[in-house]
Length: 227
Image (cartoon, rainbow, N blue to C red):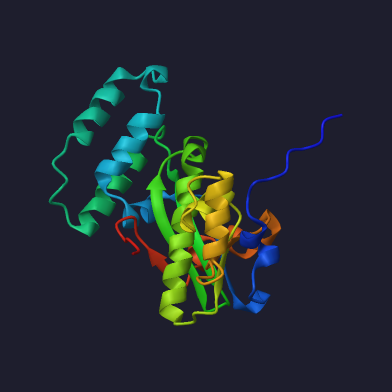
């Protein structure tokens, strides 16, 4: 029986090597949540919602051609100048008129948690959960950036950021290669510049994993960027 390969991920960047205590950690995670169309319109444009429908609906399965033509006609409405109220009314009209339109959507989110007072969520993208799994590493990296942004706002340099995705943690620490010589130089450098972001198993990020949009104390939209 072959022995499992030893992980090249540095022990110094795991939660076991994290210098801070549990109460001095910002927990981050990314994932997907199902939201209704009214909430979706708060974070995405009507155009993005139409694109979602066109991407995931199989119009060939619909037998009522007249309905499809009517929907296509409405989809080409010049709704860009609509007020927020008008957009909501227009979307509600579509949902009520075409019962085959999905009334809820999958969205990718990034989350960062530090105590009950700081439960942040960033809405990232509007797409089906299955397709979104292909981008999970980048979503986890965004969750880490959200956590670092929270740390900056708290002005607490001793706080560490925890995430359960090794690719995202490595990238946030400037590791793009696990080559032996690269890691040796990197590990020598962190003695003077300790890392901020650490990897932990899934159970260590459950506070962020379970956080929903409705429970958030602050919500960021897709156009919010963190330096």
